[in-house]
Image 1 (tube, rainbow, N blue to C red):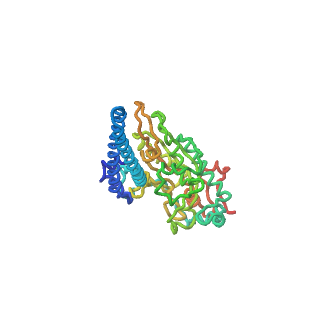
Image 2 (cartoon, rainbow, N blue to C red):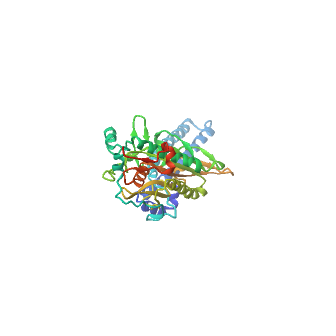
Image 3 (spheres, rainbow, N blue to C red):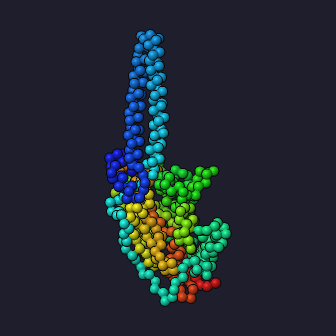
Length: 420
């Protein structure tokens, strides 16, 4: 939402902020903007007067007396001083307006409601003839994870995958990357895990989520909370040609989140952690194609869960639950029998031109017109929770775990993980 939108749609902007549960003072921004525009008008008028004096000085310098010339010099000097004062005030005012605008969330697509909507459920929830165990018990018993060792190394809410567990997680990463490359034509990127501050502003992560980030002050770099950050900045300050779009990118990275304020939630196991692995999908599209591409991305991510034969559901998020930068979001949850919960494994969003405006990614139309492209992102998928779903849903009465058929080639054709 830029200043033009706020001026022309003040009440709509207030409604968007309210529906999203944000606390942004639209009136304050508009008052500051009105003051800014008055100062610009005043500055421009002073510049005009100064220019007139300068022109008359040059025109009549051989005619006017020294006293009259000095008077014009003083007038020009005084005008220059006033212009400088206004420009200094304008500079501070524009910084304040910009800082407030950075906290404004994206607009909301008309199809988004104020309550969550379950779009559909797919797959069958396993029906055991025994009480299924949660992943932390299965993982420890089979030597797949070691949470004591991870706590010794880094404290709570970190994961140490071990042995076949590490191989299983790597298999999931490679399977997802291969699947999206082969069937969905994504180009794989391996980006830096540390990014500059401007990348986070461009992606919409800063300034709002600063407390959730791991920051390295000496290098002025942040650890990425998701590969969305580097992927949506690949074409920052660039102009793409219309015929280049859509562009599909994917990246496997570790993701780092402080999870500030979440202590006490989902403490056991590896549901909520500070570091986890994920394959991220990002699309650059023409504005008129972005909602078709959003639905397509939902199907692309769902295809992974179908291939793994895991029960899942698709939800359309409410306005208040969507990410700051999103105009419309679907979440995909997978069911995990051991914890008896639906676990979010993907969030798929159309950010429309929100991120493109912030990082200046434009598209040149065939007629030469320039406009901002639309950018979409989605998890394809997040692995700790996918790992959880597999070991909990595929557990057997004898304590072993069956390996989904599509993953077996990635695990040296191993069919079952058995007791040590």
